[in-house]
Amino acid sequence: MRISIWLIIMKPRELKPNIYSIGAVDWDRRLFDELIPLPDGTSYNAYLVKGSEKTALIDTVDPTMGDVLIKNLNQIDIKDIEYIIANHAEQDHSGSLSQIIDAYPNAKVVATPKCKAILMDLLLIHDNKFLTVDDGATLSLGDKTLEFIYAPWVHWPETMLTYLREDKILFSCDLFGSHMATSDLYVTDETTVYESAKRYYAEIMMPFRATLQKNLEKIKDLEIDTIAPSHGPLHKNPEFIINAYRHWVFDPPENIVVLPYVSMHGSTKAMVDYFVKALTEKGITVKQFNLSNSDIGKLSMALVDASTVVMGVPTTLAGAHPLAFYAAYLVKILRPKLKFISIIGSYSWGGKTVEQLVGLISSLNVEILDTVYCKGFPRIEDFESLYQLAENISKKHQEIGL
Ligand code: FEO
Image (cartoon, rainbow, N blue to C red):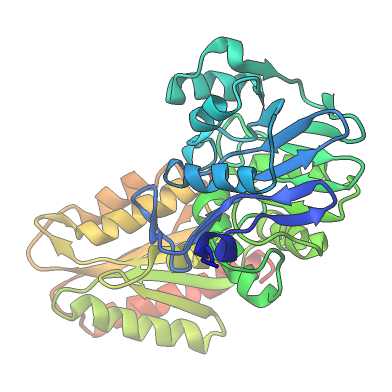
C-alpha cells in the first residue's frame, strides 16, 4: 500500500470532540511583510467547530497554503460549512477565503463591519457573502455557541476574538500568538514559546499598548480553558501567556538601556565601548546591537522592557548613517514604553545627524537627554561627557523608581 506523506504530516488534530485544528505549518518562511525575520517559521492556524446543527470555520490560512486547508477539510469529511468566521482581515488568515467560498458556496463570512469593508477591498469579496456581527453577539451552531468579542488594534482596527462558550476556548486571532512552526499542537516548552511570543508582541502588538490594555481588561473575567491563537502552539495554560502580556503591556520599564549602534571606522565604537562600561558600573543592564549585523526582531524584543535608548551613530553623507536612521524609525513606530533617549557618535567635518534623528523621534513621549557628538576620534573631554551621560541616565532611572 502506498503511504501518503500528506496523511503523516498534515493530519487535522482534534482539540475536543468536533473541534479541530486544521491550519497549516509554514516551516520554511523566513520573512513576514517582507520585513520581519521569522527565525522559527510560523503557522497559520484555522479551526473547525462542528455543532449539532451547523459548522463554522474560524479563519483561513495564508493564500500559499489554501490547498492544505482544503485537504484538511476533506480529511475530516466536511461537506458543508455555514459560517466562516473572519477574526482578522490580514491575508495570512484571510488569503484563502475566496478558495474556501468557492469550495463551500453556501458559507457566509462572519465579521465585524470594519473587517467586512477591509475584506471587500483586499479580496474583492461580494457584499452578499457577509454576515456582520456586533460586539458581544452570539451565533448558535446547535449545541455550541460562538460569542464575538471586539478587540480592535490587535494589530489592525477590525480585529475580533471568538469565544466558544460551551468548551471555554478563546480563538484569539493574532493576540497571544507566536511565529513558530512546531509539530506540537499545544505549548510544551514555555521558555521557548515565551521568547517567540515576546518577539511577536514586540514586532506587531507593541505600538498598540493602550488598546491592548483595554482588550486585556475586557477578557479578564472570561473563563478560558484553552487559548487558540492564529499563530504558533495553543495554550492549555492560559495564565502563562495572559500574564506575559500583562507584564509587557502594563508593567513599568526596567533598568535597561538599549544601545543600537553602527560604526564605520571605529570612533563611534570606541564611544560605545566606554559608555557601556560606564553604564554597567552603575548597575544598568545594557543591550547593545551592532546594526550592521543585528536581527531587528531581537532589537525589538529588547525595546519591550527598556527605559532608555541611546543610539550610537556616525555621520555619513552629511547625515545619520542610514542603518541608524532605520533603527530610529523602528523605535518611533514600535512606540515602546521608553522614558529617555540620547544620541552619541562621531562626525568628520559636519552634518545634521543629531538634528535629523531628534526630528525623527520627536513624536515619541520621551525626554531627550544631552547628546554626546564629537569631531573625529573621541578625546578625553568626550569620554568625560559620556561618563556624565551615564550618570544622568542612572539618576533619571532612580527618579522613576528603578
Ligand atoms: Fe497574523 Fe495580523 O495577521
